[in-house]
Image (tube, rainbow, N blue to C red):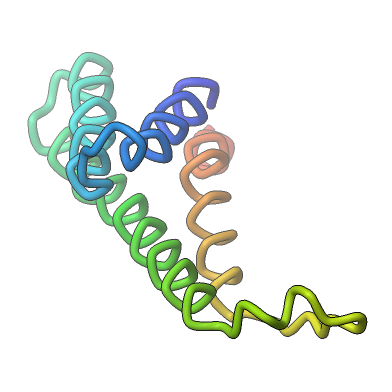
Length: 114
């Protein structure tokens, strides 16, 4: 679980280093695939792990980008108003789901298998 959190921080830091977040998601999936290959000695399990983790992180990156684009379109003068109105952004639901699956998904699978 700690490795997942460290790798997620790497993905978030990728935009600051001029690296595409999707490339960082592929690296995340690759690292997890290597870990699964070492643990299982099966290339099939490693490829499945790569696809799952790359998909989860890429989905999270997509919704973060969509959320950032939506906030940039909002009127900048609204933040200076005396009564700011906070509205619900539906992008938070899939982002939260992806983060929970990435960080706690392995723990959940381990508990279900054992």
